[in-house]
Length: 343
Image 1 (cartoon, rainbow, N blue to C red):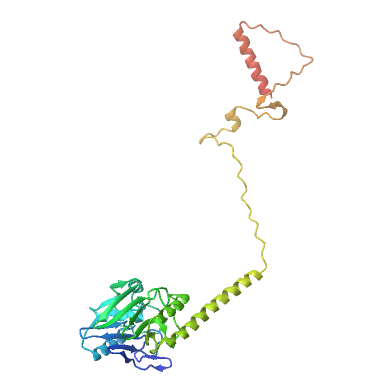
Image 2: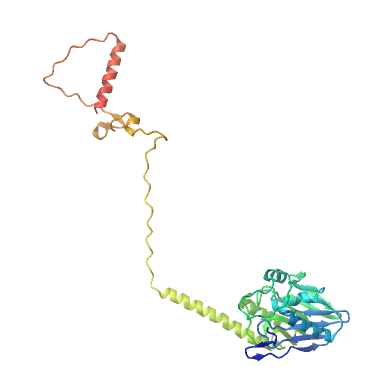
């Protein structure tokens, strides 16, 4: 990414152009590692179709200068094989070309925005990048013509390198642009896709009758390069399955801990009905009773009268007979209340 195209091992070789079929080209950028991708283009008399752009302004301008050295025709169409910035950052430099991609490619180019990766890479010279997402999208397949050359665009059908990988297949020339579904000589990147999906994508690529494969990174290859990918994907899946199995065995071998006894919260006791707010009287004052009768003297909620105890040594006072029946009932009533309070 630096000005001298170099890594820690020294300067990289310059990009080179390969004509893989008549009027069909592959633009190869060594050494094919992070952000150093391959592109391609198809030439016709009235225009050019480009397959992907590059990661930085300078690299994309170098690619466009290479195209201009082959033909004076303008770039009319750009095909994005997926949303990653090393294949889409240079889209804006092809304006007013039509940019085509999968429907999810457009969404993720917009969501990713301009490059901002903190200190992951040491000062890449991105340039004055502007985000230009695809504005012609498709779900499954689309055919693009460049003069007499037919390019069939196919969604790979499953998350693999990303969730929006497509291939550009030229059936008459038997050329297949795979984007980053193929890393020739490098380790495939699947953190934004699926390992199992990448394995399925390889089998889908085998179905195309291609003599030449232009990978997303690394040198041009053929279908034989797919075997290395299959071995790597199967290795990753087997390693993950072995790790899961060891984890299950370790979990079964650990001594089982007795479950902790959960203390249930104590049941709340029913509280007596509270007095209305502002009533400061005691319960005895509110009810007028000295105490609640208990024991044998309470039968079925009714008070039982005790038998009268004879008192010796007392002289009865003469009483006056009630003057009427009403006075007799009133005296009996008051006498009963007095005896009740004694209890």
